Length: 375
Image 1 (tube, helix red, strand yellow):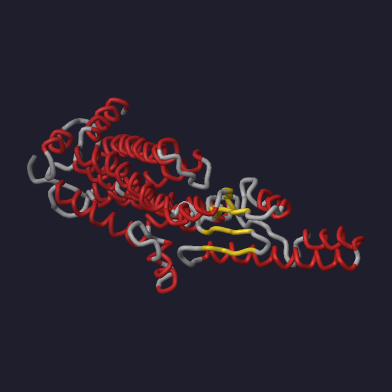
Image 2: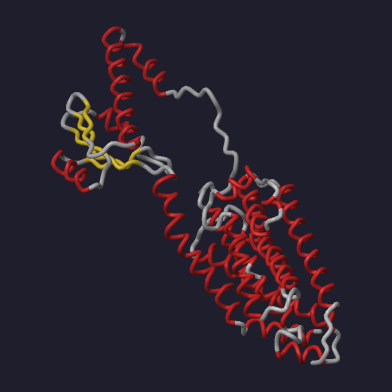
């Protein structure tokens, strides 16, 4: 058994389709997603401090103190630069800042374009101006009330309590990485087909030799599946390691859980490929080509190319995502990231295990039915 596992493993590793589709292609695609998609979230969706330039034409220590306060910390509202008017306007023209705040007794805002950032700056100035006017007016009427008025304005009205729904990564584009891991798992069909072909006399010369060897077909297929699952698990682990440790992308789940999900998904892919490899009389090359095409269709419907396609299917055909192997892997990672719901995660994992056992048993049944007139 160990002898067969060793040589089946070596045979799988030497397959060019395995090297490219399961090792090289995922690395290329993960790099592409990292550069083109995940950076979009940081630049356009995730909130970042607004770059502003402040020109102090008059001495206003209070305003400067307030600006310094809202420009500190990890969640700072502004990234403030103090400069003279000429330099500030040049920074605005060069796009280094979103707006220029001029303080010369009154406040004015100079912008080059309009947008959300400029609106936030304008709202901040308006609020500060109103607050300052009220404090000054009350100071004229009753100097003793200044402290109370200032304290009232410094307190934020909280009509609700903010609570994070999840501790995971809220980057909406992270689902593409989940789908990439699912793609590696489902492309394990190529490994399963390779295992089946090595034991079918009508598909390869190696299959002919295996069929006339004294070792039973059940034992050889079992050894082949073990070796295929080992190879596929390594390929999936490489994809996860590359995403987490090389690209340094936060999957929102622990690396161990991501590995476990990918490995179980890999076994499912190998089992499906093993079953497909026992059907029909196509050549091994044709089977591999069809399996890759079929796997990419499943990944497309899971959201690998178009992120919203899975949600469209959830609305029109909700049952499909529950039987799509690629969607099962993706959803298992997604539920762990978003709500950490172990019940839903375990349901997805058990479904993958059930699919794996189902196609493995069917594959063994199909191989036992094969007979050849001559070898």
